[in-house]
Image (tube, rainbow, N blue to C red):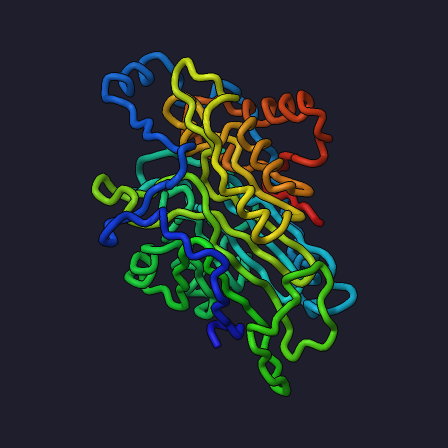
Length: 387
């Protein structure tokens, strides 16, 4: 038992460790799609002088109140109930989401503080407020993609754990110590392709061997499971980097995540790039990241995906680690995602793109390719998508 769940680590599907540096020195992106694009100090100075550091548009996303009563009704259903067919995803701003399914509520990358910064008095400040108060969140699991301050908000995580000590935290390799030193418990640290199965125990049930667990392999769950299956969580690859200071770059792993209930599949992109585009490059001819096709091959196509679309300019600096809207559509296509939601935009000013540019360019790219606009959407902060 861990927290409120019976937790089992499953056999890894892939044993490739090409993303590990020798002698445990850290991690790397192992694909030709990643090339270092670290700018020079002179280039940074030129950008600061010639490019606005805050969005030019004055309008902001609307914030909707969350219907927590409706979410609670879904969570209260038994995962194997005939009524338990839906999964809902609520955007809390930036890359933070509340994933709600029968038997479980998962919080992803909950950066809910006023600034995404190591200090509270400086750094990128929130332009749109969260749609709820922290004390309104009743979650079972927190999933973190990497240690950047706009994704791993340690202050928020500590407050959540004080209110509910049984919360389980999933983090990529190397991040456990940060959480444990902050007083957090129930921390599971994952390498790419590590999978855990979470079940709701029954007092009158005999636990099933993980080898015989087959409900994740199809969209329909058997009715005679000895324990209520809640979710399978798999740490999956993405193209990014890590650091919380000037001296720990790539010392810890970054990841995307694949979450699967008895009836639905969800992919969380975290922070990722798709290709490296240098000045003068033709975007359509440079190598692209193969990770997302690999994820689809190993785990299936998601019913719903959350994919980053913002903080992508200047492209010659950020393309290797941040998706543009065009890149995000490519990821959506590689995954063969049935529906995707854009994230990593509209909340903090982290790069040179204008406020509404990610949404506008996403629409243009979908229209250009003949993809229905309802297949890849953007939502208001606090809005819930149900699949």
